[in-house]
Length: 311
Image (cartoon, rainbow, N blue to C red; front, side, top):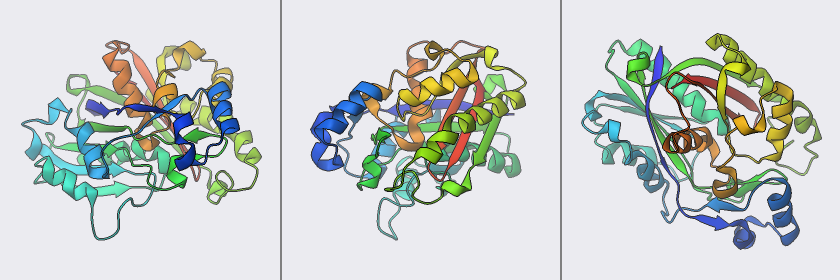
């Protein structure tokens, strides 16, 4: 059994998307479309110019890490983009040094794009299981700067935000945190190219999107030994609201049981989305002891993933 021992987040000030026209090439018509149909009104933009500062802003709020630094064996960054700085610099190494994680090996995962956050958690539990120390911890870091046009948004889909999250992972049951009960991941490799982000019509991807996401949601629930009726809240990725209407109908989970509150104010914060939403839900007292929560993510490429967690 693996647990999320603690989750901390960093959400900088939101900027209205109408003010981002110059940087994101979103014209007035597209702005109205995003607002009216996709549920986007603003996105997070961090004043921190570097990625390591963004990640530290989230990790510094992780109270459970204080005094436990020598127990952290792995620091894993979940990335959507392969790099945000020129070689040989490493924002991740700077973060580990700043946090005093002297015994930790540092690595990043990028293969699943915006689904890499859950991939990182799954990698963490694999490494911890092989480590041999039941007290070992792993720190997963998510969140990126919108440093290129591609990072600032996907046409007809979303606008990128600069929120971040830090997740402390350990082996153990309920006493050690929120238990991971089920995880499912599927990659639809035919979308590896520019079917979604390029000039081609995204019709083929849109056609499979709802069913593919529903399939991994079901698979994660089956591994956890529960049904959709047992899910108290879906904690999703923040692409847009319109896509969730189709998923809601497909799986039979009412829209009011899908946490969409952050979409209008954060934008799509890459692999950090489900953990940011989990942190917000916890802050608002929406997570009940013993209840089940279903986290989701979709990464370009295209990878669909879902994870059942019991609070």
